Each structure stands twice: as C-alpha cells, then as structure tokens.
Length: 180
Image (cartoon, rainbow, N blue to C red; front, side, top):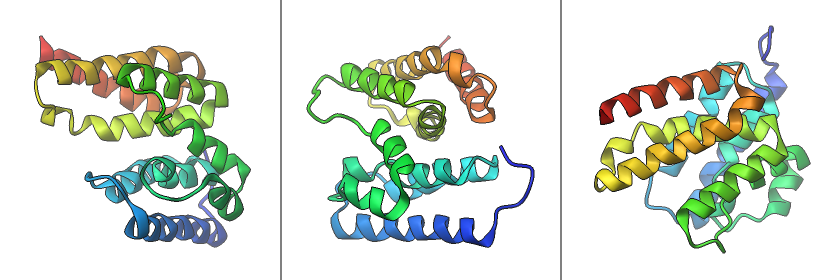
C-alpha cells in the first residue's frame, strides 16, 4: 500500500497498459464477455486501494494471455518480468479441460507466485462475483460459490490482511447467505 500519490510516470505506464489492453482485444480478442471493462474494474479497484504499479499493470493485463494472441514475451518486453509472472500465474492452463481442476491449478500457481498474484486473483474473483446471479442454474451458481470459497481458503494465509481480500470475504459471506 502507498502513503503518497502516484507519480506522473507511474500513471503514464498504467495508461500505456490500458492502451495495450484495448488494442490487443480489438486486434485479436476472443471472449464474448466485456473483458476490457472487467480488466479495468479489477485494475482500478487495486489502483484506488493504493497497490503498487506492478500489481495494477498485472490486473489490467491479467486476461490477455487467455483471450488474445498476445504472447508472454510481448508482455515481458513492454511491462517487465514481474508483471509477466503475475499475469501468467493468473492465466488458465487451457490444456486442463476440467473446470474445477483448471481453477485449482490457477489458484495454486497464484499461491506459488506469491502475494501479488493472489491480490490480482482476489480482485478478479471479486469483480466476477458481481455477475454470479446470471449463472445458468443453481448448480452453476453453487460451483461459482465453491470456487470462491476454495480461493479464500488457499489465499488466506498469505493475504488475509489485504483490503481486497477482506472485500472478497465480505462478498462471499453475502453470496453464501443468499443461498440459505
């Protein structure tokens, strides 16, 4: 977290990542969901909470490897190896076909990468949870709640004091109560 405002240089780098996100999706985006808005909501939640530039940049770019033709080397060249490592940890392994195994693999890679990747994943899940009510049926809704619970259990020991994690736990409590 930060005690002082961001520098114009940091904001310029964040703006550069936003431009890269938008142009990448316009060129090769392959997801019917509004990924650009989602990525910006995730990033600006973390930005407004004062997380470091690398975390914000990673949040902006967190879906690019999954949903565009952008390659890892391109992210590394433009934004550095730390950002790439966080983005890779937050990207699904498409070779894993079972959704629950894919999520568990993703969560484990975030855990292994560390606190910054877990913070981005927490903000990602938190943003996605605003749309859980659109699940196709009760079983799909329950799967989403279970996914959230699994992440919370895994991440708690590393990020329990983080504001975004506290927000995620609060949202989980609200969603779990709706089921009763």
